[in-house]
Amino acid sequence: MSTPTHTSSSAARAAIERPNGAGAAAILAAGIGCFFVAGFAILGDKSAFFNTLFNFSKPTGPLSGVTTCAIVAWLAVWAVLHACWRSRNAALTRVNAVAFTLLLLSLLLTFPPIADLF
Amino acid sequence: MEITTRGLWTLIHGMGFGGLYLLACSGALVELWRRYAPGAEASATERDERFLRLYLLAMAALAWITVLTGTYKIYPWYRAVPPAGSDLAGFPQRLLMSSPDTIAWHSIGMEWKEHVAWLVPIAITMAAAVFFQYGRDLRRHPQVRNAVLCFAAVSFLAAGIAGFFGAMLVKNAPVSGGATIHLVEGGKQ
Image (cartoon, rainbow over the protein chains, first blue to last red):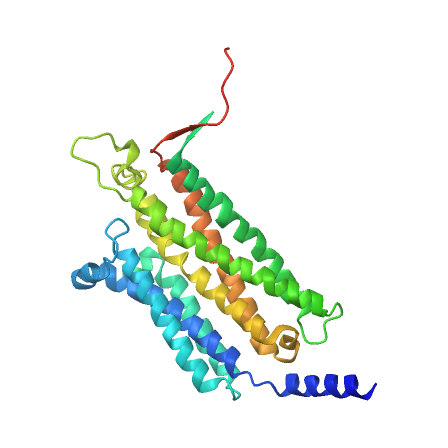
């Protein structure tokens, strides 16, 4: 009887002590990744240089490069943040605020009338 | 009753993968809201946790399949440039741009849809990864849970925007062409 109790209490303690860093890294990276999509889309639309550069797949056009670059950059940022934060606690209030701001900006900046302001 | 292969792909992309994602998203939001709140009355069991893991994984897979089929299978047909003097019916982007009454379906609708849809797989992949990491421990990390909920909600909104414009674009300038598939033979009137 004592072993399961010991095991479950150890598991509970480990769960309580599990740092939020891995979650914070994923959340912030997702906000940054979404912002990359919007930012690269504006770059591809406004700059002839980037428009050509992003033309990874001719049938799809610059959208292929915009999204591929954004996904690669998102995964790279996530990997770096995860490596830095996974075993510690991050300031989640600040992380969430930055991630939500970037996410909402991404929604707005992908809207063509707003993107065309740049 | 017949459908073209391009029409069928559009149907699979929009009503299949995209529609299924929207349906699944509402379920995930309810589940995360009800069962993973700190002190939730209907707290999640290990079985519930395993189920939601698979559910979020399936949603992430759906989101990726939807944007990839949209971007690399259907979008090239949508944006194809017609040879000079040809009928615009098989070239949806050019058909929409040929009239001031329809051009905004492309310049606002398609331009927004093609980019905003890509926020969906990023947001839901994050939600799935965080849930894989924390599972029922999300109750002890309310800020992490709130972030997952917010990103899942925004993914729902973004998928809704993409789905709405997808449906409207199909109404105004359907992607069609390719081989014709006969579904049902019609009787004589």
